Length: 273
Image (cartoon, rainbow, N blue to C red; front, side, top):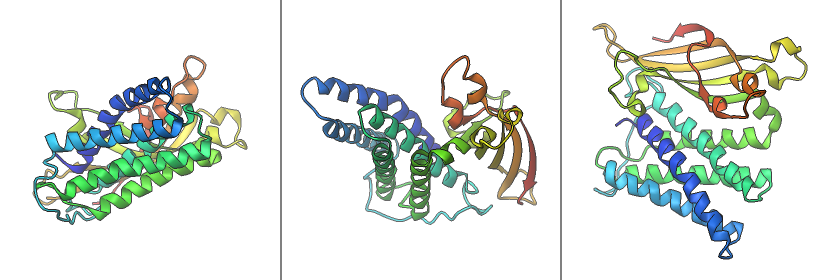
């Protein structure tokens, strides 16, 4: 399984387990645990989940440590850089997820955001450490740097509210409707990453512009021709709709701050290859 896919696996795993860990920590409050002890319990549980999953599925600790040389965004790399953006997105999402729990436990916004960043780096760092001892992977400094970028951006968007109101980091998934038998977690051929700049975050703009946003995205597809035997990389700019804002009168959700709905934007693309 590619690095991108495995990080999405971790997102899904922890998105399922984090609420459970948090609930266990809340229940532990009745026994006298303070918020610091609950934070420790949450991080130990998350780390144990990643290590356990890695041992069962990714051959963690099956060999002596080694280092992998993956490259960055070249067309000849395994994923054309999609895996690197996957690392950044995963760390960004985990940073926000942890910090939201910490805020609910009474931490101030700056403190919760800082601890959320640390927790995200801890979880993704444990993954890289496990990779170093895996027969199929190896430690990648490129991946760890992108983990740092994602967690750092998550921290910035929470501690600088003006930035958080203006910019989202999102993942888009548009499946092949003619072939739904595969695992969408491993289907990076139909994924995109993007930064969404939201007009709603700019007070100086007129009201009629507020539902709109501009996307700056990147995606990679397999090359199927003989002449192109690597990855086809595409940069794009798009005009989209801010679903979070449009849905606010009906429901409060931040889901669309992290997931980009397909088919609701107009894109101008540039093929890198």
